[in-house]
Image 1 (cartoon, helix red, strand yellow):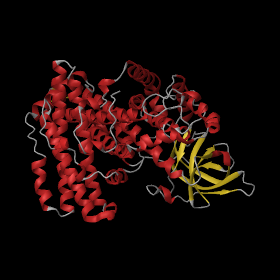
Image 2 (cartoon, helix red, strand yellow; image 1 turned 180 degrees about the horizontal axis):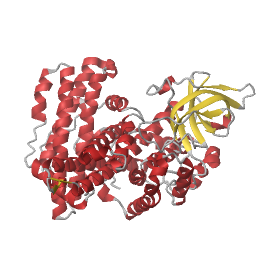
Image 3 (cartoon, rainbow, N blue to C red; image 1 turned 30 degrees about the vertical axis):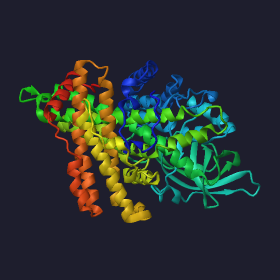
Image 4 (cartoon, rainbow, N blue to C red; image 1 turned 90 degrees about the vertical axis):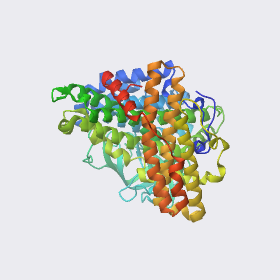
Length: 574
């Protein structure tokens, strides 16, 4: 790992050196070994039974979860004293990425090891962990997370589920209904959020065996047919007071902090989905012939392959950059202190905006990539016998769960504003001219950052504390901030990797960087112009073109180079 610790949002304020970022090219032998173990498990044990999983053979799913546990893939985030490995976030994200090829099973795994286990890991007492965590690690128990309700989705704190303390003070009695709970059909331990005395939002560890806990029928979903999604119905469920998770009235901390990691893990899953889609599209384009030639020889198809490769490169760059940022900060915490997980959560919370950013960028990149690769398949992409059809169905919900992309967009500038990130905090490094092989891209990034800070500063000046209610404006600021982080991550990754790469790979890194840059510039300008128009600032609107000057010469050659390499390998090339 690199040693420089970057604070959340700091990327907007100064020029970042490529040596400060962690990239996939920095993976250690241990990272690669765990990734290979995961790949082999998915290829050998999950992909051959995908149809059975799609048909809701949940007994088989649980069996495969247990086999997954035997390989140690449930141990990654769990502390050593309870049988875990507590490895770095880069490892956790890499395994999650590889699980994307497992389709429905990948989501089941993500929910079990993420929102299913992390609330207990981060907030559980020693007694609670001793009772449950080892069983979750071994998949003897499967975890589920129950936050959403029929009447409260994004407004999680508007939950109606209640928890009333029994007269003898030994139990809380829970009543209510939870909606869209993944893994619920075969889960054994539920993290359920309810309001104590109808006021104090709190979390509870609820076993499936507790009397009064029932389940609705499996939801009939557009996609993810092989994952279990049911209502969890609580009818006077008696939960021992020992099963309160964290503190009464502090459930919001558990809900939101665990969701930060959930969003991050979803980003990694999307990286894997993009690689899967790209391989399917490239392979089909070589096999499918029209007018007596493979369709991979057509410019219209080649551009799709190049664009999806670039989107995947950027998605991969943002996920592992953030993994490195979080790992560097967490490495400074003494594991021997009594409040280790309190400090640990503060470390993750520092990057809440980046977690939201990655969730939005990666889910939308996956949506675009999968859509384009289905288009490459033509009419066959609409047929269920081709994997791209299932990917297309399964992907759509990712822009909804773990907080809708709209909610996550609103979080990003709001969190940055609370940190005081605005125009008057501009670092002098953003005023100096960029130099080096990627000077044009870096100069654009400097202008994008200056523009974002000016727009955010004027928004705060114009609306004051009321800026938090100007959702249309906040959405444009979010899109601008997202494009800056994504482009910078891609460019810095290309620059860092080029130092030790072969001449051929250097050319590919420069090409993919150019594609990412042109795309990000277009999307940033659209967001910035809309923001300036919304706040009625003509001077800022006029300065956008000057701040985002980037010629993009050689773009077509770059796309053709990337497309050729992708067609030859029939997979993601980096």
